[in-house]
Image (cartoon, rainbow, N blue to C red; front, top):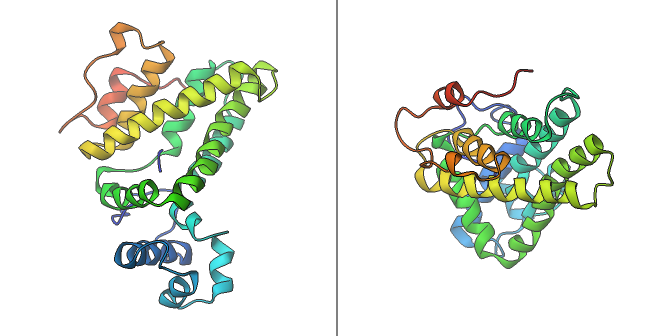
Length: 227
Protein backbone atom coordinates (compact mmCIF):
# COMPACT_ATOMS: atom_id res chain seq x y z
CA UNK A 1 0.00 0.00 0.00
CA UNK A 2 0.67 1.04 0.60
CA UNK A 3 1.54 3.44 0.41
CA UNK A 4 2.15 4.88 -0.14
CA UNK A 5 9.15 3.48 -3.22
CA UNK A 6 12.76 2.87 -2.54
CA UNK A 7 16.35 3.31 -3.54
CA UNK A 8 16.99 -0.37 -4.08
CA UNK A 9 15.01 -1.54 -7.11
CA UNK A 10 16.56 -4.96 -7.66
CA UNK A 11 13.89 -7.57 -8.21
CA UNK A 12 11.10 -5.02 -8.45
CA UNK A 13 8.28 -5.61 -10.91
CA UNK A 14 6.13 -3.18 -12.84
CA UNK A 15 8.66 -0.42 -13.57
CA UNK A 16 11.67 -0.62 -15.90
CA UNK A 17 14.80 0.71 -14.16
CA UNK A 18 16.19 4.02 -15.33
CA UNK A 19 13.03 5.34 -16.97
CA UNK A 20 12.52 9.10 -17.24
CA UNK A 21 9.57 8.87 -14.83
CA UNK A 22 11.69 7.11 -12.21
CA UNK A 23 14.51 9.59 -12.71
CA UNK A 24 12.13 12.46 -12.05
CA UNK A 25 10.83 10.75 -8.90
CA UNK A 26 14.29 10.30 -7.42
CA UNK A 27 15.44 13.82 -8.30
CA UNK A 28 12.28 15.30 -6.81
CA UNK A 29 12.70 13.31 -3.58
CA UNK A 30 16.30 14.48 -3.26
CA UNK A 31 15.34 18.11 -3.81
CA UNK A 32 12.36 17.90 -1.44
CA UNK A 33 14.61 16.49 1.28
CA UNK A 34 17.33 19.08 0.70
CA UNK A 35 15.32 22.27 0.37
CA UNK A 36 11.69 21.47 1.24
CA UNK A 37 8.64 20.53 -0.80
CA UNK A 38 7.19 24.02 -1.11
CA UNK A 39 10.57 25.53 -1.95
CA UNK A 40 11.23 23.07 -4.78
CA UNK A 41 9.77 24.02 -8.15
CA UNK A 42 8.79 21.85 -11.08
CA UNK A 43 11.30 23.80 -13.19
CA UNK A 44 14.09 22.78 -10.79
CA UNK A 45 13.09 19.12 -10.95
CA UNK A 46 12.92 19.17 -14.73
CA UNK A 47 16.25 21.01 -15.03
CA UNK A 48 18.00 18.50 -12.75
CA UNK A 49 16.63 15.69 -14.92
CA UNK A 50 17.70 17.43 -18.11
CA UNK A 51 14.16 17.62 -19.48
CA UNK A 52 11.69 20.42 -20.13
CA UNK A 53 8.84 21.51 -17.89
CA UNK A 54 6.52 20.17 -20.58
CA UNK A 55 8.21 16.76 -20.34
CA UNK A 56 7.59 16.72 -16.60
CA UNK A 57 3.86 17.05 -17.22
CA UNK A 58 3.93 14.10 -19.58
CA UNK A 59 4.60 11.95 -16.51
CA UNK A 60 2.89 13.81 -13.68
CA UNK A 61 -0.15 16.06 -13.44
CA UNK A 62 1.29 18.07 -10.54
CA UNK A 63 4.25 18.32 -8.18
CA UNK A 64 2.53 16.27 -5.40
CA UNK A 65 1.85 13.46 -7.87
CA UNK A 66 5.59 12.77 -8.07
CA UNK A 67 5.28 11.00 -4.72
CA UNK A 68 2.42 8.75 -5.83
CA UNK A 69 3.63 7.15 -9.07
CA UNK A 70 4.11 3.67 -7.62
CA UNK A 71 0.89 3.87 -5.64
CA UNK A 72 -1.15 4.83 -8.70
CA UNK A 73 0.40 1.96 -10.64
CA UNK A 74 -0.67 -0.34 -7.81
CA UNK A 75 -4.26 0.90 -8.09
CA UNK A 76 -4.33 0.30 -11.83
CA UNK A 77 -2.87 -3.18 -11.36
CA UNK A 78 -5.45 -4.04 -8.70
CA UNK A 79 -8.27 -2.94 -10.98
CA UNK A 80 -6.96 -5.11 -13.81
CA UNK A 81 -6.54 -8.12 -11.53
CA UNK A 82 -10.01 -7.73 -10.03
CA UNK A 83 -11.48 -7.54 -13.52
CA UNK A 84 -10.09 -11.02 -14.18
CA UNK A 85 -10.98 -12.95 -11.01
CA UNK A 86 -13.13 -16.07 -11.48
CA UNK A 87 -16.81 -15.57 -10.66
CA UNK A 88 -16.74 -18.33 -8.05
CA UNK A 89 -13.94 -16.86 -5.95
CA UNK A 90 -15.29 -15.30 -2.72
CA UNK A 91 -15.14 -11.52 -2.56
CA UNK A 92 -12.53 -11.18 0.18
CA UNK A 93 -10.39 -13.97 -1.28
CA UNK A 94 -10.42 -12.16 -4.61
CA UNK A 95 -9.54 -8.83 -3.01
CA UNK A 96 -6.73 -10.39 -1.00
CA UNK A 97 -5.26 -12.06 -4.05
CA UNK A 98 -5.32 -8.83 -6.07
CA UNK A 99 -3.79 -6.74 -3.27
CA UNK A 100 -0.93 -9.19 -2.72
CA UNK A 101 -0.23 -9.49 -6.44
CA UNK A 102 -0.20 -5.71 -6.93
CA UNK A 103 2.26 -5.02 -4.10
CA UNK A 104 5.92 -5.81 -4.57
CA UNK A 105 7.86 -3.82 -2.02
CA UNK A 106 10.72 -5.42 -0.12
CA UNK A 107 12.52 -4.56 3.09
CA UNK A 108 15.23 -2.81 1.05
CA UNK A 109 12.58 -0.41 -0.24
CA UNK A 110 11.80 1.02 3.19
CA UNK A 111 14.23 3.99 3.35
CA UNK A 112 12.75 5.69 0.31
CA UNK A 113 9.21 4.89 1.40
CA UNK A 114 9.90 6.40 4.81
CA UNK A 115 11.15 9.57 3.12
CA UNK A 116 8.03 9.74 0.98
CA UNK A 117 5.65 9.18 3.88
CA UNK A 118 7.51 11.69 6.05
CA UNK A 119 6.87 14.32 3.39
CA UNK A 120 3.25 13.31 2.89
CA UNK A 121 2.61 13.43 6.63
CA UNK A 122 4.22 16.81 7.22
CA UNK A 123 3.24 19.00 4.26
CA UNK A 124 -0.39 20.20 4.27
CA UNK A 125 -0.66 20.25 0.47
CA UNK A 126 0.53 16.66 0.32
CA UNK A 127 -1.82 15.50 3.07
CA UNK A 128 -4.75 16.89 1.09
CA UNK A 129 -3.45 15.29 -2.11
CA UNK A 130 -3.13 11.91 -0.35
CA UNK A 131 -6.90 11.71 0.06
CA UNK A 132 -7.37 11.62 -3.71
CA UNK A 133 -5.02 8.68 -4.12
CA UNK A 134 -6.40 6.71 -1.17
CA UNK A 135 -9.91 7.24 -2.51
CA UNK A 136 -8.87 5.80 -5.86
CA UNK A 137 -7.42 2.72 -4.10
CA UNK A 138 -10.62 2.28 -2.11
CA UNK A 139 -12.76 2.65 -5.25
CA UNK A 140 -10.82 -0.09 -7.01
CA UNK A 141 -12.10 -2.47 -4.33
CA UNK A 142 -15.60 -1.06 -3.91
CA UNK A 143 -16.20 -1.02 -7.67
CA UNK A 144 -15.27 -4.70 -7.82
CA UNK A 145 -17.57 -5.54 -4.91
CA UNK A 146 -20.37 -3.57 -6.57
CA UNK A 147 -19.98 -5.55 -9.78
CA UNK A 148 -19.87 -8.83 -7.91
CA UNK A 149 -22.97 -8.08 -5.81
CA UNK A 150 -24.96 -6.15 -8.39
CA UNK A 151 -25.19 -3.14 -6.08
CA UNK A 152 -24.33 0.50 -6.79
CA UNK A 153 -20.70 1.31 -5.97
CA UNK A 154 -21.81 3.91 -3.42
CA UNK A 155 -24.09 1.52 -1.50
CA UNK A 156 -23.24 0.22 1.96
CA UNK A 157 -21.62 -3.14 1.29
CA UNK A 158 -19.20 -2.06 -1.47
CA UNK A 159 -18.21 1.04 0.52
CA UNK A 160 -17.73 -0.94 3.73
CA UNK A 161 -15.52 -3.54 2.03
CA UNK A 162 -13.47 -0.88 0.22
CA UNK A 163 -12.88 1.21 3.32
CA UNK A 164 -12.21 -1.70 5.64
CA UNK A 165 -9.73 -3.20 3.18
CA UNK A 166 -7.90 0.10 2.77
CA UNK A 167 -7.71 0.54 6.56
CA UNK A 168 -6.33 -2.98 7.06
CA UNK A 169 -3.75 -2.50 4.31
CA UNK A 170 -2.62 0.86 5.67
CA UNK A 171 -2.15 -0.72 9.09
CA UNK A 172 -0.09 -3.50 7.52
CA UNK A 173 1.98 -0.95 5.62
CA UNK A 174 2.65 1.11 8.75
CA UNK A 175 3.88 -1.91 10.72
CA UNK A 176 6.00 -3.14 7.82
CA UNK A 177 7.70 0.25 7.51
CA UNK A 178 8.52 0.13 11.23
CA UNK A 179 10.05 -3.35 11.17
CA UNK A 180 11.46 -3.57 7.61
CA UNK A 181 12.13 -7.25 8.12
CA UNK A 182 10.18 -8.94 5.31
CA UNK A 183 8.31 -8.25 2.10
CA UNK A 184 5.24 -6.04 2.48
CA UNK A 185 3.05 -8.89 1.26
CA UNK A 186 3.75 -10.80 4.50
CA UNK A 187 2.08 -8.03 6.50
CA UNK A 188 -0.72 -7.48 3.98
CA UNK A 189 -1.48 -11.18 3.92
CA UNK A 190 -1.81 -11.33 7.72
CA UNK A 191 -4.00 -8.21 7.91
CA UNK A 192 -6.34 -9.27 5.12
CA UNK A 193 -6.75 -12.80 6.47
CA UNK A 194 -7.70 -11.30 9.83
CA UNK A 195 -10.16 -8.93 8.17
CA UNK A 196 -11.77 -11.72 6.14
CA UNK A 197 -12.15 -13.79 9.32
CA UNK A 198 -13.89 -10.92 11.08
CA UNK A 199 -10.89 -10.49 13.39
CA UNK A 200 -11.76 -13.73 15.15
CA UNK A 201 -9.53 -14.57 18.11
CA UNK A 202 -7.81 -17.50 16.44
CA UNK A 203 -6.38 -15.30 13.67
CA UNK A 204 -5.19 -12.50 15.95
CA UNK A 205 -1.80 -14.06 16.54
CA UNK A 206 1.57 -12.35 16.75
CA UNK A 207 2.22 -9.96 13.91
CA UNK A 208 4.54 -11.31 11.21
CA UNK A 209 8.11 -10.53 12.15
CA UNK A 210 11.68 -11.44 11.73
CA UNK A 211 14.22 -13.51 9.89
CA UNK A 212 12.95 -16.56 8.14
CA UNK A 213 9.37 -15.38 7.94
CA UNK A 214 9.33 -15.04 4.20
CA UNK A 215 6.45 -14.63 1.83
CA UNK A 216 6.85 -18.25 0.79
CA UNK A 217 6.66 -19.43 4.38
CA UNK A 218 3.57 -17.35 5.06
CA UNK A 219 1.84 -18.74 2.03
CA UNK A 220 2.65 -22.32 2.96
CA UNK A 221 0.67 -21.81 6.14
CA UNK A 222 -2.03 -19.60 4.60
CA UNK A 223 -2.12 -20.35 0.86
CA UNK A 224 -3.85 -18.09 -1.59
CA UNK A 225 -6.88 -19.46 -3.44
CA UNK A 226 -6.01 -21.28 -6.64
CA UNK A 227 -6.38 -19.30 -9.83
